[in-house]
Length: 132
Image (tube, rainbow, N blue to C red; front, side):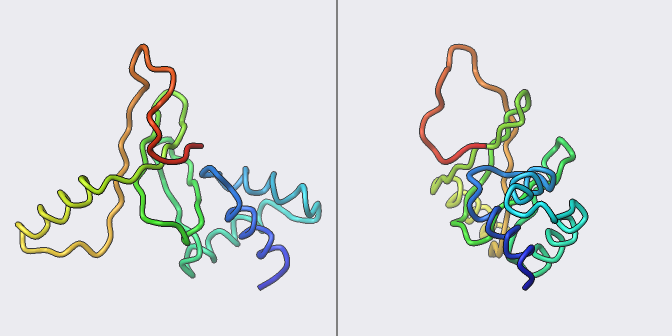
């Protein structure tokens, strides 16, 4: 793996949000000013194919990325700010498995994306995971 690809992967592994390719480029460019945006796009496609990263195409139409070496989690996307909140719910996981089993299936993978807006009068969310 080239030095620039390692840098891109490191930037993504250290991210505590779900950056798009331009965000990854900006962060990586600070460490290597010879990096080009096209290199980031090609690298993201390669790393996704290799299973090292996951690409999310949320409703805003922008592909966002995260390192694949994370625990399973789902996403809540704020439709007004674009903020992505990661959460895990054993109850939701159990319900999905139950529904699949009732239909004669075993879940091999899934993605759950919830879209919402902050409820009036709530300034802080309950701790359920990390956010962008």
